[in-house]
Structures are given as structure tokens and as C-alpha cells.
Amino acid sequence: MRRAAGEYLPQTVGDETYRAYLPAPLPPEPPLELGTALLRQMDEANRALGRLDGVSELWSLFDEDRRRIHDQGRLAGTALRVHDLLQQRPILSIPVACKALNLTHPPVSKSMRRLEEMGIVRELTGRKRNRLYVYDAYLKVSSEGTEIPA
Figure (cartoon, rainbow, N blue to C red):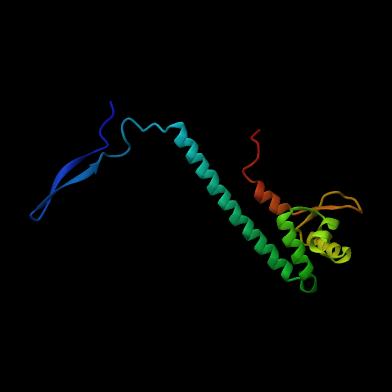
């Protein structure tokens, strides 16, 4: 049999009497049983908080990389535009970047090499032509918590 969650007790202050609700001591006896719907909602809320944390981490990553690129001087303009595109497409080829940014191959290629030297992107293919570059840190942050347990 479940005990009452609390009780109303008469209280007096000066000439006035009122009833105050006093909850039963915690934890309740017997313990509350959480339904599966509530557990599901709590799990969903925890995942949402994790996503917010990931978004915050991404913004910090983008900001830090942007500052590092900006410090590169002359190359910063095109490299910043490539970096902006990498935030939308974390796996990118130079021809796709040229088309999306409406730039020619030499400045995009030079910027991508610079980003690679800075450790912001990594070349995936090992080829001389049709290379693919990946924004590793971005993919790592955005995929945290999505791993399938072994």
C-alpha cells in the first residue's frame, strides 16, 4: 500500500490560521516506478542536451580554426571561403569547391594545401588528381555518440 505523498496541517501565524501542505519525506516508500514513456522522454532529453553540447563544440572548433586561418595573412581570404564551404560539406574535392565558390583551381588548391599543412583538413585519396579532403575534427565532433556499441 502506497503512503500519502503528504498532508495538510493547520498552521497559525498571529491571529490567522491556515492549512499548509507538508510533503512526505523523500525518498518515497515504496519507490516510484518510472513508466517506459517517461524513461523514453528522459532519454530523449539527454540526447538533445548532448546535441546542444556538440553544437557548442562545433562552434568553438569553427571559431578556433577561423582564427588560425585569419593569421595566415594573404592566403586567408580564399582559405576562409574554403573553410566556410567545409562547414557545409566536410568532405570536399577541389573541383567541387571551385564551382561552389566560383573560383579557379590555383587559389582553391593552394588554400586546400595550406589547410592541410595546418592540420585542418586531411587528404583522403593519396592520388595526384581528383583528391578528396576531409575536415576531420568536424566529422569527429558531429559523430560523437553515434557509434554502434560492440
